[in-house]
Length: 201
Image (tube, rainbow, N blue to C red; front, side, top):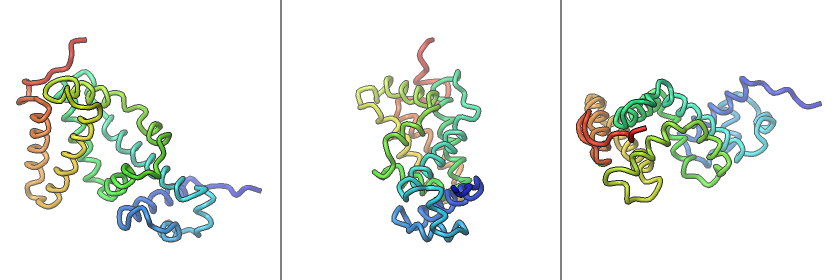
């Protein structure tokens, strides 16, 4: 008879894996994850058939959570600058609330263990953000650059901004605001109300 699986234990495993990855990297042993989750290692494998499956599940969980935070209140009909600003500040808000999750997802994002199918599934529902990034990439100085460059640029500048904000917490607001201003200028934007505008519908 198959053993019944508890949703609470599954969540505990995912949370433990996230914390262990953030602290020790993707090479962490499943025994250590299980110990942190308060279960036997064999129990972990009743929820996830392999470590790779677990890591894919962690990636999916973290991406879904981040996307939910960003999409909440997303100003889909606002100017391009307002949409970009929303993404910038909502992502930083998520990271501020869960720094370990940021570390874990950053490692998983560049790992070959996360399958293309998992990445595609995690990206579903990301339409509003993808549209905004596409618009940025097709206008201003970035239009001659490859597809995906804007997304990579935004993520890189977000990472740099968060790193320096963590180093200098008293200047956090100034760094976060200045970081967005620098990103917006890199995209060819100007001060609020000027620069790049969304296409006419």
